[in-house]
Image 1 (cartoon, helix red, strand yellow):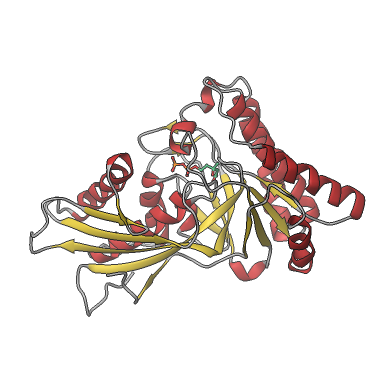
Image 2 (cartoon, rainbow, N blue to C red):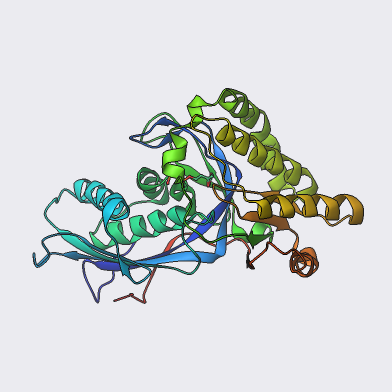
Length: 338
Ligand code: DP6
């Protein structure tokens, strides 16, 4: 990545969120964020984080300053960003520089729409570029993974697989197909935008306490090739049942971990039942997946989006709907946020 000539030590990056078809749930190594299984996602073009990082080479700042969606971050949220900046300082061989970080999401945070994915992908690209680290996407993916697992996938656009790997160098994402390969739509039925009670970061540590975890991980490895094939052939009728199965398997693991995690709300079930009814009774080809929150992501071909939106409006628990197609790679942009 090229550093901006106009403002050395300052860079801005934009990264899309992503929706996982095969989920990342559970860590084998919490320090390095090595997951229990490969995961596959679509990077979202319309839901993104923009982040500007400026390294304070003049030494004016006594601490990193982090602003997210207009609010100065403090506590664990800020510490997580500082920890990531520490990693990048370490890689750049300079531990003294403090940073000013301003980040903006164009969608609600902590609502089951993976804001940590786009946040840590954008932070990684902006911070590395601003400090002069010239790295390829594979390396950026490994760094982003340390901040947030799913962020490793948001470094790439289109359809992406994060290889579990077994160390820092091998646990990286790669692009399976670019965004142009398939104009699939993700229609998010938003049930709640409230901050979730248990972050996915804390949830990952609990996966191993579920008696169903090992069975889910085994099932993932039997499905990966089928999922890749379905994406290659652009066959939603093949992909859909697989992504629904893994979403339900992940939530079964969540519900049966100790302590138990229950992210669903009554509205979540209203959408799941409606989607099945629409598919079985009316032949509407729509399939669901759910991340660590109550909102339901619905995947469909563009031709069915309008009808799906019309039907979602009839469900009382759907507060709003956000839609996106696949988006591109995380990238450096010229418009700084400060
Ligand atoms: C349910 O990547 O948010 O969305 O590494 O702790 O930041 P951290 O977790 P995160 O976990 C994502 C969990 C998920 C499934 C997925 O996106 O694969």
